[in-house]
Image (tube, rainbow, N blue to C red; front, side, top):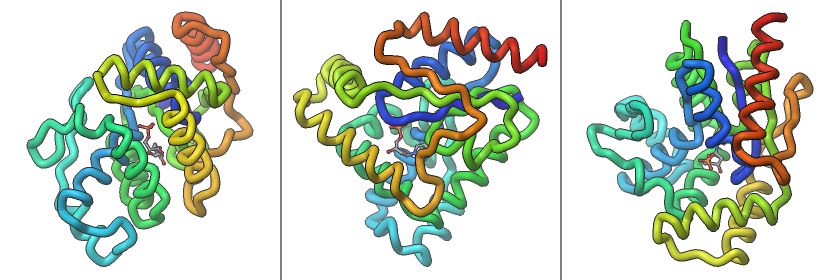
Length: 217
Ligand code: DC
């Protein structure tokens, strides 16, 4: 079974998806990391994101591997580099390109085929795994999400302020929600969880309880 968890940046979905996968003994797919990796690769190759004629053949030659907790592109470990604020911005811009989304959606379906997986992103329940019987949409206020993201950045010694992070999140939210292809939407059949006042443990308990209902019918 595929469990989908979508939501905006900082909604707690990565922590929740990883934790849920562990509790269920499922695999975990971080699709945001895929967009980040592709943005990084295109920038390094000096290919403009909108240049479909160059992007498509380039991506067909890329080898993206995602062993647990790592992101390896063409043999290089890019796990840490792709977490910078600059890459957050670049990934949201590359994710607005329809030709990029079409390729990544295909990769995601291939990776998940025949597996038990928790898939996390923006379009997992609305586009990629529409048939999933178990969909979640996590969200929280911009302030709470920015505070979480700031704590993550400072823990990695990446300089940032609350104002700069809030501004970045608002720009990304707007881009993610208004793009023509695969925008961030709340699927009608997803369970919505507002995480402002919930601990990661509370969120996990809720998710696990709901997944059990999906499995048992
Ligand atoms: O979850 P994240 O912050 O690592 O995602 C990085 C960017 O990738 C985000 O701005 C939106 C985009 N994204 C997307 O468009 N679709 C997905 N399934 C996952 C991420």
